[in-house]
Image (cartoon, rainbow over all chains, first blue to last red; front, side, top):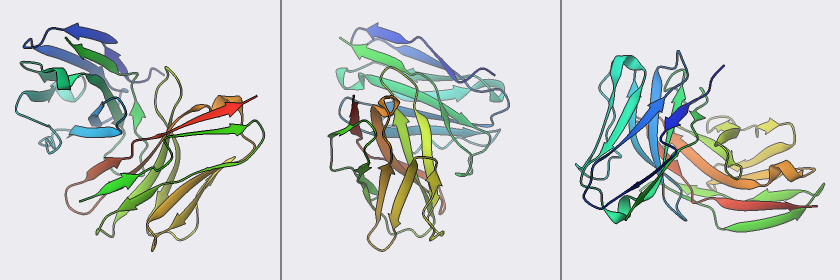
Length: 115
Length: 115
């Protein structure tokens, strides 16, 4: 079946503009994660959704970052007033459940460049 | 603070040889899972192997095995009979499952398998 998809694959934006990144998880996966991968860095956890529960926003780096998940499926990560340090690859992953023995399946990522 | 350290930014190995990627981590928590993920060039991140911290037996998946030393907080990955398709960035990670889950990734080791 289809894997996790993300759009756009690349996004170039000017400093100060808002951007929206989209993630389509695998059908039936209740858990959805957003990570940020900066050059030379590991993955940084941003936010996690599980079903209808309140999201775990503990990894969001500032209040310019927000995310929502509509209907328990598609998720959008929004970055307001983008800064150059926001340039990174944003990865989305989904799993059947948040329990760690369920594998996270990753999307191809969105490469964000802030000029 | 929870951290993962991968001290080898880059490694190379001859095809058919064996290579070991190192990973150390730091946490005061007792409940966690450890993972190795593989990110091939321009391709999506995939799970290589998973280890439950409460299990003493080292996990194995075909040519991939781990050496889990809980007291030393070490979790190395051994790749036997290396293949060209093993060329990728490898990330060590752990998920803490005490209370609010925490997802911690290392900075990665870039492995190149030479023909």
